[in-house]
Length: 102
Image (cartoon, rainbow, N blue to C red):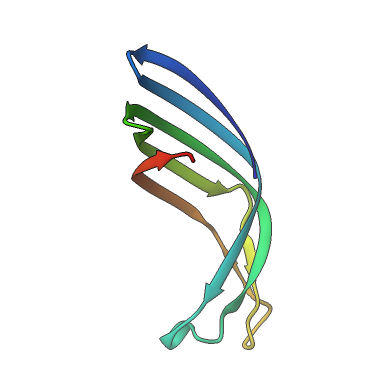
């Protein structure tokens, strides 16, 4: 995935940013129970959007980010029972952390 990010100052040591990415996503599916015959992986085109903020604290910064990632095409998952199934993929994450460099 190739990502670009644009940041803008909020004042003081605070910064907000927005990011966009395009690339490939590997979708892996391991069925269990009644879906057990379906398993495998596929690489499909994908995109992501991120929105976040960071605030300077000491030698690093506290940050929070919302990230949405989505496959732009359905993955083809193999099946021992038939010709396979199409599997969609999207992921939403909220990340909070402390970043530092040394």
